[in-house]
Image 1 (cartoon, rainbow, N blue to C red):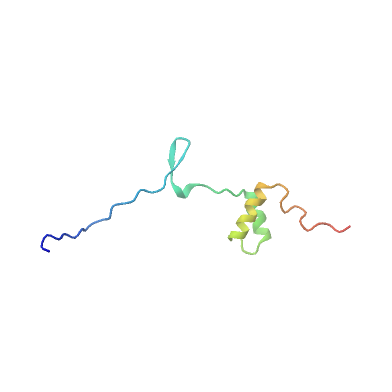
Image 2: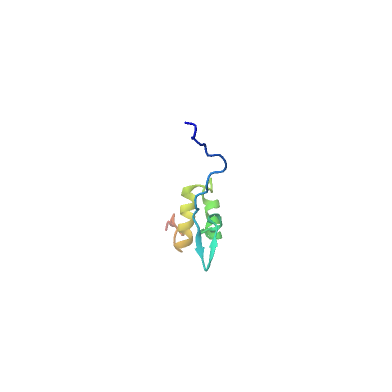
Length: 77
């Protein structure tokens, strides 16, 4: 047991995930928001707590589908 060595110092770093966009590396945190500003505004008006999973799902659906949440209640004749 006299030749037993204990490794000290910093641990070797594992390679991180790198996203490539148009010829350059982009850090993982600066991917950008995929929800349009109109969708965010609609979700803030519609839901009591906006930063929630359900509100974000509805806001992204609002941005993708032009007829989503338009006249959803319907008018009585």
